[in-house]
Image (cartoon, rainbow, N blue to C red; front, side, top):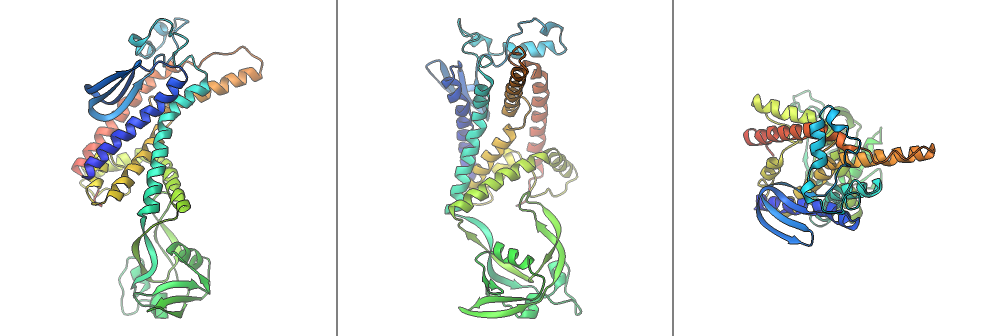
Length: 411
């Protein structure tokens, strides 16, 4: 069922992504002859107006066809350029859909740069909105697992907090010294109330001396004096989700983990953090691919926080029998689609957006200098880079899929 939900959700996300391109393109008068989900032979198709809508056999993406993606070679230079055939092929793509009167009127290249930017940004923007709505809904309704202020276990010694073992001469933890017990609920530090684990840690790390810790024990407030002990230990970086070493003040307990529903504002903030975190993760993507492939060939355990292919997402969907978790995966997947498509390289949407931004700035600069309008930027010259990127993305996709099949991440 998890895989079914992911497949249907992904198909809807891709379809809406393409509508994000289609709607502004039609509003700006561009001819859009094809809207498709998947690739290969058609399973279902219907023509409405001048656009043919279809669902295809291989559900690995989607696309729309807009005529005149690139300006024509008006100066006849393609034949003498390096990679001229590739550039000419890009210009002529979808030429069979051109009709009399379309050239320079209903083509994408004939639009002002700002309109082209809106069209190309429309698709990723839809994924961003879907991701934020889905994740915010999950966080504010079902919630997310989080550490609470309730003590689940008192750790005996400091060594055990740093992944060591207790011996007869090991230093006791502050919690053991203070006499905390499992079931105690932390209510205040030095008289200041705390309502979450995050507030406990924020207040604790800001204090250097002994702390008067108020806990609720069987409904009765009890004050315990907590001595200051600082250790270097691995903690999770909230921005990247990775483990880093940091010097922190400890209590010496394991706090209970429960599912906690978040307020609307906090839910939106948590969803926004996932967007920024995904942007940060993209910068590490090449290293993560290398790590996944290397560990697969070396038969080593992969990083649970590492990148996965769509197969890895499907595998994750089978680990928890929860509709909320499946929607969480779909929301995360849409955020990943948004961030990935914003990479400023062709053939990704971000590459076309970058071309439009460059043209907009160039024309504005020429106008400021009172020079002749340089005309549209010839983004067709990026076609060879787009082809190289397509090959790289295809190879990376295969490598990650093989890694997920042969050496899946264990959750």
